[in-house]
Length: 256
Image 1 (cartoon, rainbow, N blue to C red):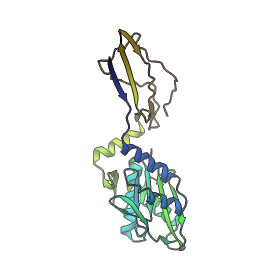
Image 2 (image 1 turned 90 degrees about the horizontal axis):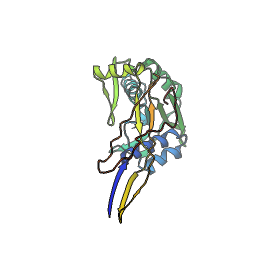
Image 3 (image 1 turned 120 degrees about the horizontal axis):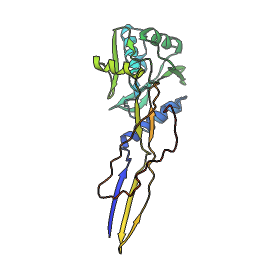
Image 4 (image 1 turned 180 degrees about the vertical axis):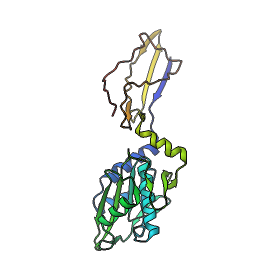
């Protein structure tokens, strides 16, 4: 008996954790939702950043940090900043007391971002979360921007997300982001489970199994795509029968 297997599309735990965090934070509306991040030990990553509430203050230094962090997310892949969570080793550990809703309002935060980040970030969302003590925590959802690169107006620099930080961009990175507007940006993803292609030879009889692989191609740019191709590598121990045919299940002029 001979048994061969080929595994496609295994997704790492870190990828699952990233998606899990993004799903969680996108639906946050209450203090209990914030507490769930702490209970689940949500971890900072490229798309999620925890800040203490005292990061929201009216000093020029604090405004500069807000501008830097928000523009970095817009220039990268988007993400969420939560003001009001204390972190240790990049994991959510506790809620702080929040900030005064009289001094730090949603309108004030909107004004700081709009006046210190250029060009303006479309579809940015700010969610105030009231606390029992009369104070507030704030959540800022920043989309991946098609108008990037965005500049922090206070220091005339461009930033990006790198690991858990907002760091200055190199010139070539700025030019690469500018090219988002004029060139397609395709990504490919296999379903988040393993596919096994196998056959068994037993008593001279060959048994084969046909496995359908359905990758998803996403165009992250606004530029239309007419054609794309996928190269699939298969273990040379597995015999591929004629005809070698690819079936087009759907045809769209604009990949989305």
